[in-house]
Length: 310
Image 1 (cartoon, helix red, strand yellow):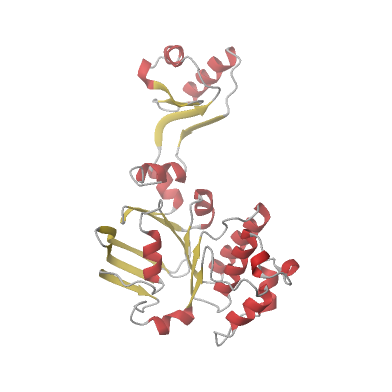
Image 2: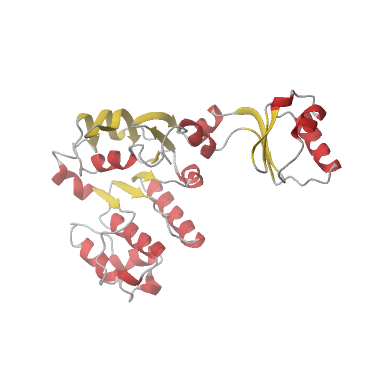
């Protein structure tokens, strides 16, 4: 994580209601200067409302927000030239070509990046003559990313930055995000891809029901989520009673949670894993996947947001 610890973004006691729906309920967190910060949560958790408030598009009902020391709502005119916003979809004129879009956005800033160089950076040179309406979803995402970066922002907001991208474009975008961090730019990233958050984010905030459910580095959060359980996948219909007896576990300690997915409620010691493998091998059963100990960020996320709508 970057050495700098100053707050590029400070959120304290944020509340927002839409009629009877309380979208944010006392949300508080800070984003350090120069870090990649992930804002994670299921649909309806309050992520979009939070980001729109940080960008100055919505006014909170209560609480305080500062981005680069400015109130996004009342000081938006001063803040906007210093931030970049990548939209998940829309916002690009359908008949313009990528170079024309970038030149248009460059005209909004005093010291923009070179549009042609940025076109190469996001890998759109080959489609430079194609209008926006004919670009693929992933290509439009890369063009939107370029628009967010062209003003040399100190803080950039990326909403699902790799949605619709092929693996090569996704890897290129990950590299751009890492370059932004290296250059000292603060990045706020929203994504449903937990592997993306684990790979890119210095810290993540998991939001559930408009409240902060967890905050920390992906490594910290997965360490806190360490489980004594063992999980494995194999063909469905294994005799879980016989397996429990063979492993000297209580009958209820081996369950088929979903077809082909099994849980052993016991510490994942080397001896237990070896006995499990031998029992399955004796019956010609192939293990598809096996996990013991530390949980993934996705598992921690699902546990913390289990009551949220999908």
